[in-house]
Image (cartoon, rainbow, N blue to C red; front, side, top):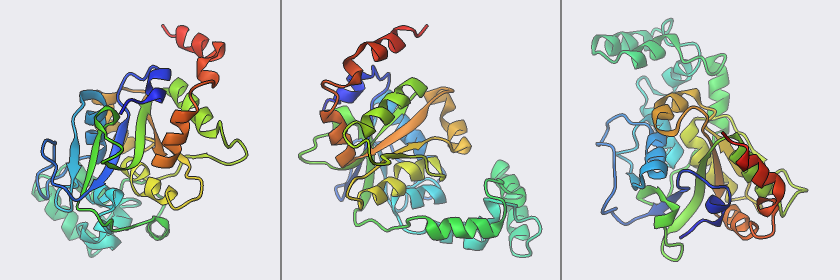
Length: 274
């Protein structure tokens, strides 16, 4: 499948489709069972190297990634459970009778940065109570499919593949274009949001939730600085993500013809790049 949008905005990477399937992927890159890995890194590899990334309930990379892909509440399997995760994302487990021994064991086993974050906290949320509220509002789900695939749109067959959304990795100019295009047919709606969550969760469960809306919205992501650090070498310093749920992607594709993308302002903006 060829993306008209990608051609119109002169996208330097491939848009990445997220697909649900029960079929064992034949040629794909996967994390080893129970091994750590960053889900966004396989999105980035699909965008830049044309590979297919595959995940299942044993190969989702990290607890947040398992949640992101729709494999249930994997935070329950975080060391020390949800209680320790709520401290990990906020103030840390150093003062927790339950968490401190776990963090000390991590450190003795050479877990390095994770042990430090576990004990001292990532500090992305002010306190554990705030993390609990965040989790209560996160649209956790256990999807019916065995596998989640991320693959370049150019390798997708929309007649056969169950595509849930498409993610673009873009600079600020191209992000601006995608936001305009998402609002092009429905300017009276709030058609794009920037939710706070892990980078992979914006491309996963938060985009899944949009499919329940009459008019699914686009989601801007990669404001997760941990994900940005993990894929900077692949995507560069300025990449943000824009995820279009499948119905919105199709609408945006139809609307390229005759839009601002064929007018002088967009052309001038592109031509002004050094």
